[in-house]
Structure formats: structure tokens, C-alpha cells
View 1 (spheres, rainbow, N blue to C red):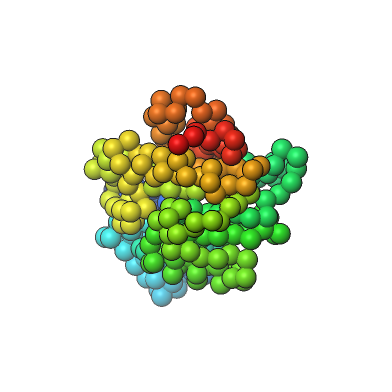
View 2 (cartoon, rainbow, N blue to C red; view 1 turned 120 degrees about the horizontal axis):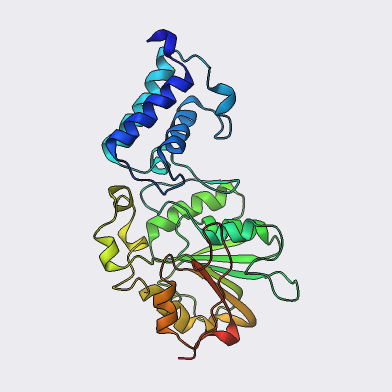
Length: 296
């Protein structure tokens, strides 16, 4: 065994064990190989981009044991790797996470990180100076927005005090506590009188039937960050109903809705939703300017 204690051997073994355990993915990785590599590199203290140069590295007994125990925990608990490593990534940005918040994953972040025009930019090329991240969770989108738009002040709102505690850790880590204000709010409930150039939101959007069949990994996340009624649109309906009063005249709303495009368009047949293209295609994020929002 000692002769085979290489990173490659451990990776191959871990991928096989993950496959046999029937794990589910989707919290930063999409397959057993990437999930195994993430946990092994974390256990060895190596950057997540450094797998290939280290494949033939020999591991001592302590290194082998440490990495293998982390894989054991992934199989035993079915917790997403992000909860075991306490880190999640959106593009180049790392965030602290634990079971108090949903694991960050968002096409909105992808769109904001893309060079050139993104859904938050004005048609005249102007950048927003006041931004709201609604249902902020770990604060990841608020932070990405603050980094994307360095002149903007950002409000980050969430109903969960636990989530806001995690968001505070991340905001402080990035040194953005003077530009990002955290607010405990049930959607717009505690934001009366506040108006923004841009509102972004990755709200709960899992429908009731889907909640009953979620893989165990997703059940480790806070239910309140996932469930949104029978059609997955309860939160989105509230956002659409009240966003107009919180947007500046040229303001814009950008919301992620998962796989609910058809249900949304059926519910709002006259609304001119725009669907920017993300890596998985169109239909996952919509954008509306203030004057395109449905009237109450």
C-alpha cells in the first residue's frame, strides 16, 4: 500500500467509493471526480487548481489518513463538500459557508463576472450606485456586486439571522463592511423607503413536489432557502409585486428562478421578461426594467 500512496491512487480510490455510495452533486461540482479532487486538495492544503502537478506526489501516512477521513465523512453524512471544507466558490471568489446558509451557486454571479455588459448595467453604459441583494444568504452575490461595481453601496437582506451572521463573516473578510449593509428583512418588509438602481435576487424557488424528492445532500441545506410553494414562485411573485416601489426610475430587477420559466411566463403573460444566456442556457435568470414590471 505504501508504494501506491500517491495523490493519483487516492483520487482513483475516492472516485470509486463515491460512485459506489451513490452520492449526489451540484454544490460546486457536478461529478465524483471533481468532488473527490476538491476534498483531497483541501485536506492536503493545496490550491484547487493544482491537481495535475501533484498527481504523482507520495503521501505520508498522516496525509493519506486525513484525506481519506474527509472522504469518509462525505459518504457517511452526505453533506456537500462545501459544508465539510467550509468554503464555496463563485468564479475566483471564496466564501465561508456552513449549514446556516445555502451553498452558493448562482447564474447571476456568472453573469456579473462576465466581461462586458451584464443585466445590471444600464443601456447607456452606466453602472449602478445603489444595489440590493435580496435573500442574500452567505452574502456572496452582494460581495460580487460590490466588487463588480466599486462605486456602489449595497444592501444585503435576508430573513434568517443565522444567514446574516455568515454573511457578516464574508463581508468582513473582503473588507466591505463600509459598502455593504446587512439587513434582517422578510423580502422588502424592512426596506420601506429604500430605492435602488439594481435589485438582484436568488430567492427560494423549489416547488413542493420537488422538495419531496430532493437528494439527501440538498436536504442538508436550510429548507427556508429552498422551498417556495406549490409552483416554486411564491417568493418571485412577492418580489415582482413590490420591486417597482424600490427601484429608481431607470432601475432594473434581476432574479434567478431555476427551472420555472414556463410557469412564470404563464403567470405573467404580458410581462416582457428578458432571459440572458448563462452557461446552462437561457431561462434561468430574468431581467426587467422598472417600467416593465407588472402593476399591482
